[in-house]
Structures are given as structure tokens and as C-alpha cells.
Image 1: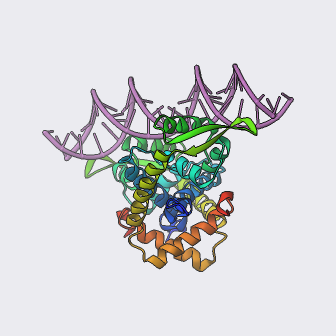
Image 2 (image 1 turned 180 degrees about the vertical axis):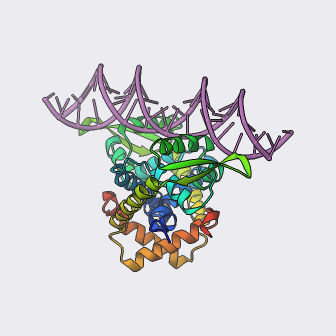
Image 3 (image 1 turned 30 degrees about the vertical axis):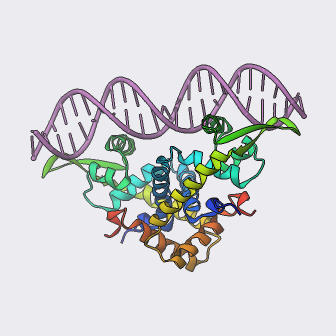
Length: 148
Length: 148
DNA sequence: TATTGTTATACTCTATAACTATA
DNA sequence: TATAGTTATAGAGTATAACAATA
């Protein structure tokens, strides 16, 4: 057997593929609500971390700040997200969800959970929890906000 | 606690993020060999499945056939991959690795394995294997060639 | 008439640099 | 002088459609 054998069934490659597949599933599930995956993540982060600035958000998302502008614009147009000047530093925009944003986000969370459950259906509840713990351990050094 | 809490620490989101992070790590590791991640996957699939056509390859990779053309072109230019007309159906290109291609691919596999090992370092050997088994179970319905 | 591979075009997405307003 | 946010531009990446060769 070739020394290269097993690459395509390695944990690393399967992880890469699984990540992409579930991303597509999330997009599909959120599409019914008129949200993109990124918009959902913007709302999730704004909701999870109070008083988030756009720069802090871009770091969390791993996206360029210039991309965040357009994302927040699109959500503000639909009145899901609010920009407010930080009184302590008027350069900063403090982001928050509106009541309408929270309502839509609740639905989006439910849709995402259904998609996740379907994706992980081949696993038992215990296996799903083990998977989550393993991924959390691996990602902890890379996602500082995960500790909180 | 808000009903939306936990989205960012869910198995699904961590899976999505982990997939992207390891993809970046793979790209970085392969860069030293002058290979892109996709070129590496082309070579890995050609090597794993004998007599693969470009169309079959595009299905395995989940990429449009028109993208495969350019990938194979670039690898053929470096004499890593060969195109040969299928005698049974002269529309088909049968792909194979050259000796040079196999040599480079061996190095690439080693580099990818090192990157994977570093990425999964927080996990024990048993946990890594459990992760691999879980991902394989989840992806089996989506990657038909995984059964082989 | 359908399929494999190829090419060309248009579209989307992203990264880079420059600008403003605040500090 | 440096930073947060914004805008505009250019580049890379992708999808769509049309074509040639073969079935």
C-alpha cells in the first residue's frame, strides 16, 4: 500500500470537508429567513457579546473590517441591528440587536439547530457531545473569546 | 439566559470554524512545496483511484469540471500529472501521476500529516481516532467514494 | 442527441489603498 | 500621529454559456 494512502480518510481532510458541508447546510437553512450565514454570525456575536464594536466583531469573525461594514449595513437596513456611537470613544460603533433582530435571530438559531441535528444524525447524543468537546479543545487556542 | 445562547460554542459552528482553520494550515504547509490545497487533493484522488477521469475527479472534489481543467493544466505543466485518452471512450482523459508527481505527493502527504498532527495536538491519540470515526460516520452519506 | 473536455465571458467576492472623524 | 469606520478600486476566484470532439 502506497505511503500516501489514507490521506482522503484522515481526520484532517474529513474535518475540512465536514466544515464545508455543514456551512452549506447552514446557509440553506438560513436562506428561508433571508439571512446569510455571515449575517447570522454577526447577529450571534452581537447578541453574545454586549457592547461589541465593529473592529472587535471583525476579529471574532476573522473577517476584514471593511467586510463588516457591508454586513452591518445590510442588517441595519432591515432594522435587525443598531449602530450607536460609543460615548467614551466616538470613533467606535457599539452594535446591538433590535427587538425585531432578536426575534429573527431566535428563529435563525432554531433553524441552525435543526440543520446541525440533521447533519450529526449518524452520531449518538454522547458521540455528538464528545465531538463538540474535541472541537472545542482544538479551537480554544484559536478562538480567544471561547473561554468566556 | 437567552435562548440563542450557545450557538457560537455548538458542535456545528465549531466544526465549521475548525474546517476552515485546518484548511488554512494545510495550505500553509503545502506552500513550501509549491502546491495549493486543491492541487494536493487532485493528486491525492488521482493516486487513490486508478484510471480517474476529469469528470469523476470533479465529482469527488465537489468542484465544477471547468475548474478541474485549470488544476490539471497546472500540474501537467510541472509534469506531476499525465493526461491519456481512454481507449474505450476517447472523450475521456484518464489521469495518472508521473514518477515526479508521486515523489512530490509523498512529501506533501508528510507535510499535511505534520500540519494535522499539530492541529489536533490538544487531543489524545484515542480522542483523535474517535474524532476521525465520528467525522467519517457523518460524511459517509455525502462522500460515496469513502466506502471503498 | 448526449457527454467529455475546453474556452471565453460575466459576475461575485475579497483584498488594498485612500479618506473622514475622532483620539 | 494613530485608530475606527467608510468608500472606491482593482484583483482573484467562480459560475454560466457556448464550442469541438466523440459517443
